[in-house]
Amino acid sequence: GGGGISQSEWARADAQLLAFSDHAEQAMDSMNGKNVGLAVNAVCDKGRDHASLMAAASLRAQALVDPESASGREGSPVDVQAIAMILNGFARGGQRDNTLFVALSGYLQRRVAEDVGFKDTFNAQAVSIIVNAFVKLGFKDEALFSLLSGIAMRIPPEDFTSQAVANLLNAFARHDLGDHNLFMYMGEVAMEIEPERFASQHIAIITNAFAKARVHNDALFAFFVDEITQRGREDFDFQAIANILNAYARNYGHEADSRLFMHFENVVCGMRARPHDAQNVASILNSCVKAGRADPKLFAHLSQVARRLNPLVFDAQAVSNVVHSFAKAEIRDDALFEAMSGVARGMQYMFEGQSVALILNAYARADHKDNKLMAHLSRVARNIPSDGYDCQHVENILNAFARLEYKDHNLFRHMAEVLLSMPPSDFDPQAVAIVLNSFAKIMPHDALTYRVCDYFSREVLPQLPLDEFEPTSISVILNAYAKIEVRDDRVFERMSRAIAEVGVDKFEGHNIANLFHAHASLHVHDAETMSRLTERLIQLEVADMRPEEIAVIAWSSSVIHLTDERLIDFLIAGIDAHIDRMETNFLRQAHQFLLTCELDGLLSLR
Image (cartoon, rainbow, N blue to C red; front, side):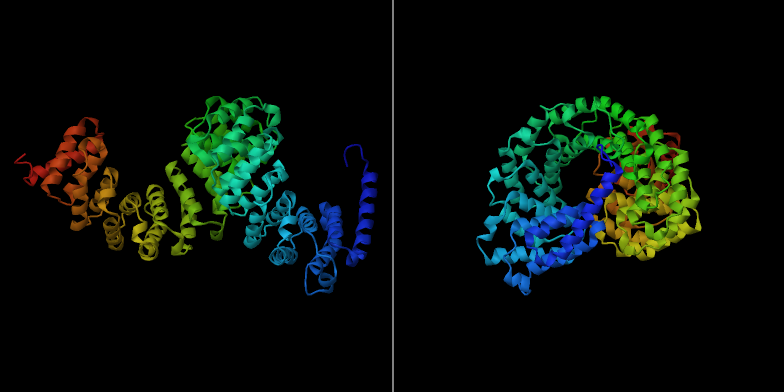
């Protein structure tokens, strides 16, 4: 108990509620719709303790709206307010009664179709309660929502409160029903309400609904910024700030109103977080990065906040967002990264591939190699069965270990088995490229790596549409096969066709260098592909190439004996322009090219 109420008083109140429940259940067959709604709402907060009454109320409500039942034929029609009360009670009690919700939805739609005046009995509160009840219990009813959208736009603005606007828009957004006309009308309604009547929570709900529904209303968002910037920190908590910033960042990105972010930067730096604010801190950081507003002072403050919070309130998503935000903002905070590592290592309940992938991806992005964290996440990942992963989880995990150069062959062998259990349709060209590149870096010469290569060559790559490939995925795939030292003519033939499909005009210097290197390393002689790439290469400016790209292409040309004079001239000009900036290995490659040209008599006229 609380508020000065003793345990015995709470027990007496519970007993009285049980007595009421028994009496109401006995009288249920004589109740009208309004009384059914009142009975349900009286007990719904403890609905599981009153399951018998809730079941009886469901049957009575269905009978009242069934035109084939005696109650439906003889009783007075159930009005909108009663329907709203019944639905609200079941939603509040978490009673997911599909049959009841279908019956009440059908009744509302039938009444509107049969009685033209029935629409006029709806008010703003009833509409918002009905749609929220459906969303709260996860029932998606597009026909009903379409009907209620039209009804809502008939209701005059003065009938709405800020809460009704928030609830209505939130329900449509959560149902992924971004009815543009409804949202724009509700925007007009909102701007007719005095701005001080909006609780900060309502502003957060409304702006997030617009962002989720991908509906832009610049006037409304400016209206709210004008009001928000007049309020002090006492009007906000971390959750409201997180939700508001998220909405503006999602809707506007770097074009988001700077006044809003500047105001909240000052507000947040003067606030103390609550024990459960981990997700909100992460969300604020993420929104600031999306909007290009990574203020060092704010980030330093939120770093301290995050490090002081109880580790148990974090989940994998929050840890990932915190670290990822600092990485994207290019703010290195090793103390924070180490603290978040400790949080992640304490997550004994992490049994999903997604959680492992999220955290690893963030640390890879931050370029922060934490051996204890990597070892812990490897153990966790190896204990997750194959069906606990999807393709993106696997590619993110492998890519993180490869980027951080953490060689864990046991993890890679487990991931190989996971990959081999996935159907070919799970992969796209980018996934294939990332996976192969990771194996090439960490475990190039292993029986399982060869099996993965063969699986991709035999089952996956032949099924991928050629127009889904991009220059980077093509070049990375072939370069990975070269590093693993697997010459597979099926792959080179498929990638040759992909190059033709994509068009060489989309390839840049680094793509061409990788492709030349792959062909040379595995001694693959594909005159047609090399000719296409050469045509593209000589269109590029020598000055725009990197020293290593010139050197790799030059070395490759000497290995596979390419003698196109235009190519030779381009590479000699490239070496001349970049030789001062070539590292030792690349100088050797350039020297081998020049020596080969001299031996082949290709320098005699130059």
